[in-house]
Each structure stands twice: as C-alpha cells, then as structure tokens.
Amino acid sequence: MAVLMELESNSAGFRAPRTQVIGEILVADVAALEWEVLRWRRVKVGLLRTHELRMLTEFLSGPALDYDLYREDFENDLQQLLQDKLEKDQADVAQTLSHDCAEGNPDAIDKVRSILERAGLDLSKILKRAETRKAEELAVEYVRHEQAAVKLVHELLAEAGTSLESLISERLRNGNDLDYIERIDRLTTIAEDRRNASLREIYRRRAILGEKLRRSLQEIEADEFKVIEGKNAA
Amino acid sequence: LTSDRKIKANRVNAQASTGPKTTRGRARVARNALRHALTLSINSNPALSEEADVLAREIAGTDPQPEIQELARRIAEVQIELRRIRDVRHRLLSEALIDPNYETLAMMRKKFRAIIHYARAFGPDTPTPDDVVEFLHSKPEGPHKLATILADKARQLLALDRYERRALSRRKFAIRAFDAARRRLRP
Image (cartoon, rainbow over all chains, first blue to last red; front, top):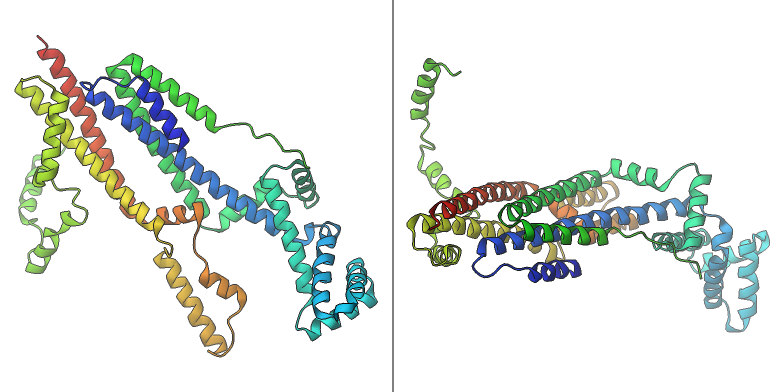
C-alpha cells in the first residue's frame, strides 16, 4: 500500500494540467499496473514462503532433528502432565520421573508409561508433540533469518544430503502449486507489459514526464529487493 | 493465395451459417452478451454514454472541430470500457477473497468422496480419523487462497484479459489518431 501511495505521490509531483486528460489516464494506468506487478510478486513470494515453512517443519519433524534439541521441552511437558496425574504432594516425584524418563532411564520410562496409560495417554505421542513443536519453532526462526537457526538448519540439511531448494521443488512438482506459480508469473508479465506500454505512450507524448515516471518506477522496484541481513541470535 | 473457387464456396457456405434455428437456441444466444455485459456498446447504456460524453469533452477541451470531438469520444468510450472490464475482474476476485467459506468445486467433490469412502469402509459408527477430519475442515488461506481462486476462475479471467487487451490496443490507436489530428489541425 505504501508503495502505491509513494507512486501516486510521485506522479502527483509532475501531474499534467487538467487539459492533459490523456496524460492523466496513462499515468493512472502506470500506477495501477505497477501496484498489480508488486502485488503478484508478493503473492508469489508468500506462496513460496508458505512452502518453505511447511517443508522445513516436515523435514525437521523427522529423524533429522537431534533429540537433545527438544529433550528439555519433552521433560517440561512430561512434568506438567505427571503433576496433574499424581497426588499433589508428589511434585518432586513428577520432576524426578520426568527428568529420568527424558534421560532414557528404562525404569523411569516404564513407570511414566504406566501412569500415562492409566490416564489414557501415550508417551510416544507426547514425545512427538515436543519434537513437532521444536521443529515449528526452528522453522519460524529460520524464516526470520535468525543466525543460530539458519546455521543449524543448514547443518541438518547438509547432513541429510539435501537442500531446502530441492525439498521445495520436489513438493511443488508433486502438487498444484507449480501451476499456481506459473499462473502468477504470467499475470506479472502481463501487468509489466501493459505498464511498459502505457509508459511508452507517455514517453511518446511527453518525453520528460515519461522519463521522470520511469525513474520513479525504478526506485520503487529497487526498494522491493532489499538485502536481508541475518539477525543475531539473542 | 485463396482461389476464386474457394472464396465463392466460402461465401455460399456462409449464407447457411445463420446461427441457431430453434426458439430455445435463439433465446439462449440472445443472452450471450448479458453474462457480464462487456460486449455491449457503451452507447446502449445511457449512464455510461453520459460518462463517455463528459470524458470526451474533457479530452477535447475547447476545441470545436468535429474531427477532434469525434476522436476524443472514441478515446472516452474505450476508457469507460476499460474501467468496466477492470471493475468486473476486481469484483470477481474480491467476492471470492472475502468469502470465508470459499471452496473450489473440485475440492468440494474431493471432500465428498472422502466422506463416502470412510462411511463405506468403516461404517457410520466408527469415528473419522483425525487427519481426515482435518482435511475436511481445511480451507485455503493467505496467498494460497488467492492462488486457488486464480486457478478456479482461470477461464473467466482469461476472457476478461482478452477484452482488456483489445480495449488497450484500441485506446492506443485512438490516442495516436487524436494526437495526429490535433497536430494536423493546429492553427
């Protein structure tokens, strides 16, 4: 929206007098079509980001994620559940049991399993939930370009012998989304061609106005493509 | 080069191509232009015709020469037509986007088939698995929703795009003719 306002305010700066109605029509066309181009590009980026997040979460929810990364979360979840299921005066027991269970102590695992089974709960599902939550957190941090998450994810991908790009392209190949992206690319090209045609007409009629408008468009487009710096992990 | 014999045959054959013959067929084609009314002339709508007149007067300014007035009117008509096309496209997309329950026909069929499949396989008393319930409640969201709408409405969008392309081309030539006439008739 800000970009459109910027373009409109830029075009208002050298708006033709009221007698130049045709010029106004063409400038309005350029502004509307530029807005359309930016919107389609953002839709495409949004689609790819959704896939990036989903693919990363799926990849990290699998065997790629080291248990140590979510052991503490699993222990906390377990402690919370055991405190609810055990008597109130057995808070210490819940803490010890959940800690030992998370450490892989077989006796503790058996005890926890039997307590949970009595309550209709499944230990493996609790473990999976903690793993998925951690995978989602890590994927979101990666998409936010947090350095620690980016480094870890790249290491995990390298260990698995794959890359995010290949995971995404595989997903796109298997679904409808490649078709969606091609469609959006086509719409972007159409809007760009029409914007350029209107710009050429402005240039043909009033070369100075056309040149100013062309430069404004270049500035707006350059602002769209910023280098994203990685954020330092806190 | 097309031969004379072929031209003659085409002309004779064309005499037989007079469109639908039955009352039902004629009634149906009579409504073809009314689907979105974009093929109807601006002049068939008094309100739009009035708008075109106002815009034509703005374009021509105080120039009293009939040729300039006529060419300005041509630009104005195409401009109003372009606005109509863009309005229809905007309405088509925004109505689908603001609908919280928007679902494509293909996805509705897929969900219906899933319900039938599970009801047949496990009977009506077996609880539906979580992943199936999740699938049945799933709705396209965010950029995915817009992408789904674009795919779903592809045919209508393509038709609108064709109208827009033609209108833009006509506007370009109308503006050029107007500019040329102005230069030529400048005192």
